[in-house]
Length: 120
Length: 107
Image 1 (spheres, helix red, strand yellow):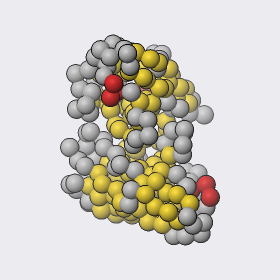
Image 2: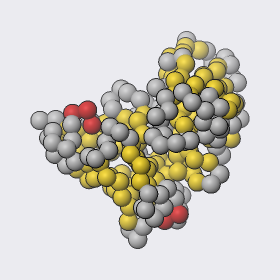
Image 3: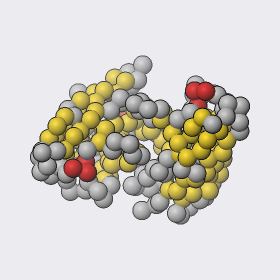
């Protein structure tokens, strides 16, 4: 069974940093591109970032470019999101998701999400 | 960036109704269009990918169509468990933008 489990969320002050993790199991993690998506309270889904299977190519939304860094450790089956210079508007539930791959480029499995609150 | 616009933003319907949600891209995205359902407090789940491919396990009352810039999600006969928020997403080019969502409520 495919599972994605996020961790690392919590309360952080504006300007602070946080690293989210996404532990993957039930599939060959190193073969799949992975994404981060967030959702502010009561708002819609916002795509944030994507890394390819060997972490050699990454993409970011403008809203987080230069502040957030996506990475992965295929030996540990884990995806990361390093978040720096956090702002109040970064408060959201953060989801990791797997990209289906060759037969489709949707996000076919999602984690349960981890809440990040940026507040003083 | 490609903008995705869904309509309507909200919709009231009854069990058994046929419902259509539309999604328009600001430029052609071929068939790189996906539909997700999200229920309160839960992660989104994919319903339709590549514009018209039904995700395994999703009931056949859900269908998707379109290509280029205009897409539709149709629910042929609403069931109680279908009341949720629906999002389209383009996977044509980064940033892989979502529509603003359509909240489907019980009439």
